[in-house]
Length: 412
Ligand code: ASP
Ligand code: MG
Image 1 (cartoon, helix red, strand yellow):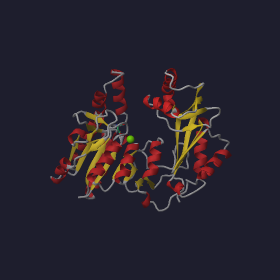
Image 2 (cartoon, protein in one colour):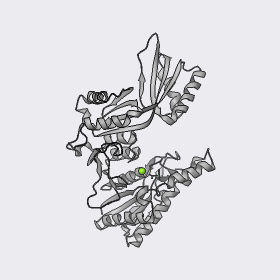
Image 3 (cartoon, protein in one colour):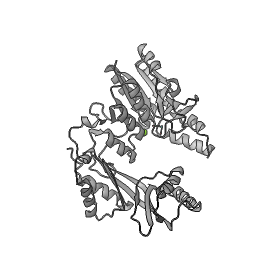
């Protein structure tokens, strides 16, 4: 029988009643002839509560015990979902990560899936079980301890199961209708996309579009898992969501597919550092060891052997970055005159595989920002993305202007 993976996020399993509604959708796919692998998240808010309890108990916690605690939310929803399906006469059984087993690395709280053996579940399907309900977000380390995959990790569980079992599709049920051209809270012209390419989704996810964990998109791209994002609310019939797929499957698309943003960026400049071989390594090595996620980097032209180095990072990492730089200076590894932090900036990006074959996207972006009188502070580009750093107070205006100028309101 063909297999389908259906993943339900926290809001879709937030109460026993919502679990029943999700179970009805699963029942429909079973009657459509599928053997279904269901991945569940913890009830909405549950994981946050568990994390808070861990931090309250032990500020410098043992990551193995963190995983023991925070993995428990999914255990509850998996059992409740299996019970709900059984009440509807659908043969179902729940599985925790270690029972499958979902074999992961031992990087607690950020483990990676290494292997999902299919034998245990397939044996049950062969006996007539119709639905395997899997606790998402968790696995087991080589040492036999419970691990978790990082926040939002049940998306990755879902894609990994779809790949391991050769599922026809991986449906991610959530509380939005799909993937949008931009955040509908910022632009009322935002449009739901019917299809989006893996690479574009990967950029959007890493730019902070919360709809899918970045790692899950990477996996889907690698194993060519057809991924559908759709709402678990509303009518089932008119619910097609957004298909994340290979770019070959997308016949017509706009040059730019989406406008993404990140509100909490900071721009930091090391003023007057020596321009010599190894200076970038001497700056960014300590930053990375301090856990600072550096995004954009700009080095100015040098004058009399000295230059300015500018980089961006999330606002809440500024203190850590300052400490790392000051300590590196004290150790004599780098020397700078000043460290200037601007915490009132935001990043706006346009993303689209169409950029590969169209010239002039950057110019059009910069003109649109100019027409709104918005100053650009830093620019970076990749093959399918252009990002700018601007004053945070212009964020909404910039997103709206870019959405307009690239005509995203209309499908191609
Ligand atoms: N419950 C976990 C979290 O909130 C995993 C997930 O829902 O994807 O991060
Ligand atoms: Mg999620």
